[in-house]
Image (tube, rainbow, N blue to C red):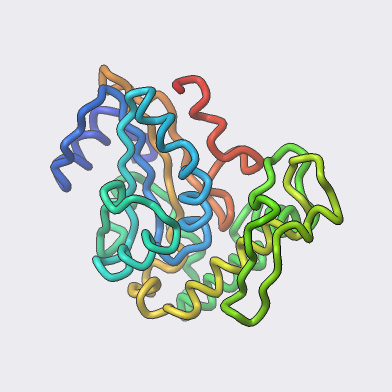
Length: 243
């Protein structure tokens, strides 16, 4: 089934987790593996909106593939409060929600993931990689000038170095690429923790907003790497109507 209704989605997820939801609207974010590039970047994008979601009386439920150990490391690294994140060991829920499983050639899953990184069966990936290096005048800058960019003690510098290229408040060249490299180093240093189910290495994400009458207000299913939103310059743009 390629379409799932709001009531079916709510029932599926609530039956599985028995969420204690207090508001009428619920935003479900279904991540792939917690070590996926998109998982880190999606959560880093939504963190500034946590208070706005509470003020708008919207529940936030995040589900990712992992376990208690990967959850701890993921939340500690991203600063996501633990109560928002729920983990599953595999992609059974993703399959029921008709989310994309990614490239699935009969080869080692790591090679499938590598091919997707090169843009194969992964629409939008190359464009996103390039945006990380060239900047984006339609996106906000990520780091303030006093933040430290730390590549695991291999290299450290103040984010003010990006001001040498641009100071207009938009996403500066190499800024997003630097954040992605920091995320990648975190994953590589704890690969067996974050990537503990290789059968799900290419699993993509999904976003669903359910209304007070169980209606599906918004949905988006990612098809490629670095495409967790349909508006990557402003990943949370879809929320503006309800905040």
